[in-house]
Each structure stands twice: as structure tokens, then as C-alpha cells.
Length: 290
Ligand SMILES: [Zn+2]
Image (tube, rainbow, N blue to C red; front, top):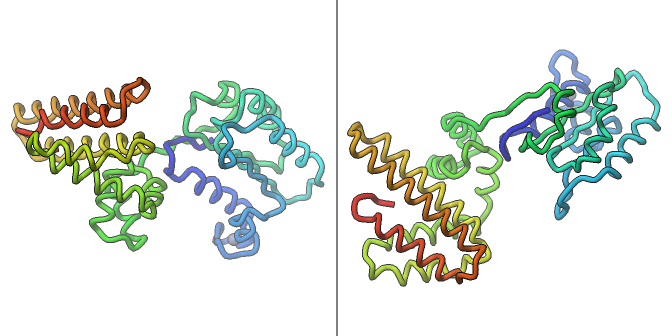
């Protein structure tokens, strides 16, 4: 089982493990170019089974597992290996997970199961105890930056993405192409930079008024921005007093964002929520540039 945050490379590694099992180039496996590698990569290899969460569905049900298990039983076991990739295992319902217990505990010699999950707590202990667990951590900033510049992204874009992606190359690559996100970021940045005076509040509030539907994404962005500002402020100072001030402001910013999230569940209008949040931020403006 490969576990770790979203976008950290679990699916890629699961596939690489399978490529290395099936690759026809024994000396250079996984080569990525042979017939087996190509068919695995496109998930058309007859000896590969993949179950993952379908778009729009909330869980993976026992029927999907039974269907896969009966397919494994049906087709003849040749000397070739078989691989079963069970992605999003934290979305398998408990009955679906239970249905796999025996197969995972005593797989036939030719079959390999690779599971992936973000949330280990949603995996039954009986499954976890039968797996060899490999945790995949968030990527360090310098490794992620090298990865993104290797992909041809401009250095500034790469740095922007690093601060937003929380060590997840998958998230970074998803954000690159998300025009809505960059628009949201630009409006949120403008709203905050226009907040130097109380008189700037109406214009800032106006910039955020259309984000009621995307409130979660907006608040997530503000939260990551708060972390960035704090980490910049705290790395630039050696003065304990200044560090404490930055730390207090960071905490207050996070508390304001938390309050905004909580208010969303109440009857307060979106404008009421953003005005409350902006006022809180305005109060902090004098000694720290959020
Ligand atoms: Zn190959």
C-alpha cells in the first residue's frame, strides 16, 4: 500500500511498480517503450486490473470488487504475472474492503496487489496489517521546484506553485492549467493589497463577491498565502519579538479564515462573511503586509 497526500505520486509509482514486473526488457525494466510497458501505461494490458473511484461517485462498492475477483478466477493463470491496482482504497466501502481480505492475504503466486490511499484511517486495520505500507511524503520545495522547471515552467510560476501546492506535484500541475484558479488568485491578491485603509474595504469586498460558489477554494488560497507570508517573515528575522509578532498574526489570520469557514454553515450571507474576514485582515495591516 502506497499512502500519502493527494498528487504526491502514488498512482505514478503504482504503475511504475507494475511496469517493472511486466516489462519485456529484462536489463532495463521498466523501459517504458516495449509493448508490455505501453499497454500497461494505457491500462489496456490484459493482465492488469485497475479499480479506482469513478468521477461523480462517492465510494467503491463491493460489486466492483466481486466482479474483479471473479475475472481473476476466470481467466487462465499463465506463467505471466497479473497486477491489480486498487486506487483510492480509502473510498472502498468496508464491505468492499472485507471482500478483498482473503485475496490480499493469500494472493496466488502470480498476482500482485498494489493499493493506494490518502487517508489510512479509512482503511480497515485488517487490510493495513496485511499490506507492506510505504508512506509517500510531501515533496521538499527544492525537489518540487526542480521538477516544475524541468517541465518547462518559468521560474516565477514554479515558485508560485510551490507555495500553493503543499509539496504535491499533482496539485501543482493541476493548478497550472486551471485558469479559474489564477483568476481567483489575482482577485484575492488585489483585494488584500487594496486593504491598506478602511476606505479600500468596499472595493476589496467587491472583488470577492462572486466567489460564493468557490468559497472553499478562495479560503484555501488565503490560508496557503498566510503560511507563505509567515514563512517569509519568520525566515527574514532573527529578532524573537518580531518572530512572535509574525507568529501571532499568522495565527490570527488562520483563525479569521476558520471563522469564515464556520460562518458558511450558518445563515450569514457571503458578503457578510467576506466583509467580516476583510475587516479582521485590515486590523492586522498596520505592522504586517498580508
Ligand atoms: Zn518495457
